[in-house]
Image (cartoon, rainbow, N blue to C red):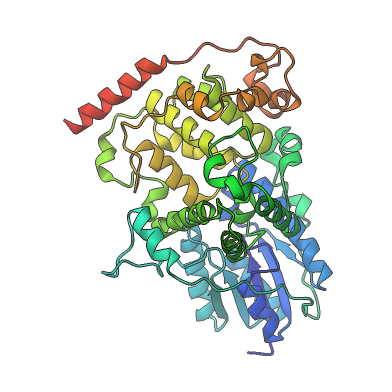
Length: 470
């Protein structure tokens, strides 16, 4: 079997360095067949992340070509594709890097069982996380439900250093046929928004590494105090690259450690945020229902509204609350949303508008180019109060108060809301070019009145919370 080719199934590990599966494959000396599969599970992801994944696939294909191999693209259920490629190439093994969301776990488990039953080596590797979700345990051998003790346990564990990227790879003797990436039309659902959002993406391993370098050269020093201010460049913006595996998390971690050891004050806070990402995967592995149901079952009786006209105003960025609207508009223009703005937007939807967190979770899953299944679920349930380690439900972010604290000069709101300025900037105007024409939004229209009075919305949320507790 050691002389037969290896099929390397790439998903969200689209890089050459800090890539355990690829490093092991290169070291094996076997002929390699890299493949990306557009299967039903991948087809099911939202418009923006599917489009952005396609950009990552294209960049990775070009990187592999420089090492002497091709990336074969096929579009069918994963097991069908892999069985066909084994038959066409005589491959003796299929390797991949693990994913942890429920749909991927179900698919990968079935694929591994079927391949092994057919006598084909099927092997999965770590690589998306610092530690596998089952590796960090309490003293009683169970999983952590609260972040702070998880962080204390995790920070005491060593993290292996990243593998170097291979300089050359050995490909198969005859390359099987594959699809053309453009024929997949991964950006079809983005419509005209793709052209706007594309300008804000940093695609590929080189761009991701440059983004990390720039962050560590400057903003990391004040990260702890500036990360909450959406009007300044105070964060790493690596979430986009980490979700597609364009940069390895171990590389990011060790560079963060280096910055901390060099005395850069914000590096410890940055490492803690990387650990929060790990914690979300830890919880998704142990309690996979977090992605679709209240983590705390007692919230099943809470009288959240389903989708509603107020939620549609929220989606369109026309609630009349500038901080909330700027957050949604930032997402349509850039593909991402500042973390502080995400909290404000989520709190407003789930509390001031009493709308179920799943409405917001699904919208973010469709619109964010840095969508991550674990982080998205954890973030929404944390804000809503229904999740692990959650903010208390009575902690209701006031958008106006938050704007006064974290956007006192209005820089963020003016950047994305044209109606607030006599001479709006290009990003504020790009919002109208990015959103669906069917929304009927245009530059020059008056800014809307608030959907709900903040004081009344807060009172209604507290009354609903009190009734649930009674």
